[in-house]
View (cartoon, rainbow, N blue to C red):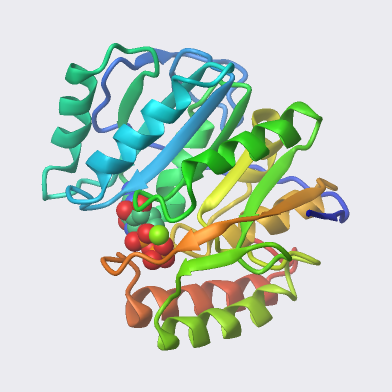
Length: 284
Ligand SMILES: Nc1nc2c(ncn2[C@@H]2O[C@H](COP(=O)(O)OP(=O)(O)O)[C@@H](O)[C@H]2O)c(=O)[nH]1
Ligand SMILES: [Mg+2]
C-alpha cells in the first residue's frame, strides 16, 4: 500500500556552515560541486547510508546500532551508518567508538558532530555530507523496525526519489501507542502540516529515505533545525515536483522520548506557522 504525491518546483541556496566536531573513519573531501559551495566532509560511497541523529542516547543507541548493522550486513546492497551527535554529555560518542572497535567493518559506522543543535540540523548535516546513492534517517529508538528498509530499497531501486514511513497510511499499526497527550498534539500538528505538505498522511514518522541528489537540492533550502524539519523538507521536495511514496510501518512508541511536548512541541508549531507565513510557503 502506498501514496504517491506530486507538486510544483523551486530551489534557493543556503549559507549556513555545517561544522564537524568529531568523526571516525571520515576523511575531508574538498568538493567544488558541493551544494553549499564549500568544503565538504564526505564518507566513502555505499548503496545506502543511514543517518541516526542522536542526542544523549547512551541507553537506546547500543541496541539500535547492533540491530541495524546485523540487518544491513545480510542485505545484498552495501551500507554505511552515520551517527550525528550534537555534543551529547552522556557518552553517546563512546557508544559509537566502542561499536566500531567490536565490529568487522562490513557495515562501517561513522560518528559525525553537528554544531547546530536540533534533530533537523543533525539530519541535514549527515545527508549533505554523504556521497552514497540512497540516503536517509531513522531515530535512535528504532521505533520503526529496521526490516522496513527492504521495502524502502525496493521503491528506491524502482526509481522512487523519496520514500517515507507512515503511521497513518492504510496498513500501518501501532505496536506501542503514544500517550494520549502526544497523540492529541500529533493530530493537531498533522492538520497544520497538511497545508504545507499535500496528500501526505504522516510527516513526522522518523523513517525517511531518498535518492541523494534529489534530497540534496531540497536540503539546501531548509532552515528548520528542530523536529519540524521533516515538514520543511517534504514541502521543498514537493515544490521541486518530487513524488513522495508513503509506506505503512509498524511503529512502537518509546517512553524515553527526547521530545519535550512543551519545548519541542511549541517550537514545532511555531516553525510550521513561520513556514505558512513565508512567501515560499516553506522556508521559516
Ligand atoms: N543529534 C541530535 N539528535 C537529536 C536531537 N534531538 C533529538 N534527537 C534525536 O532525534 C531522534 C528522535 O527523537 P525521539 O526521542 O525518538 O523522539 P520521538 O520519536 O518524537 O519520541 C532520536 O534519535 C534523538 O536522539 C538533537 O538536538 N540533536
Ligand atoms: Mg523516536
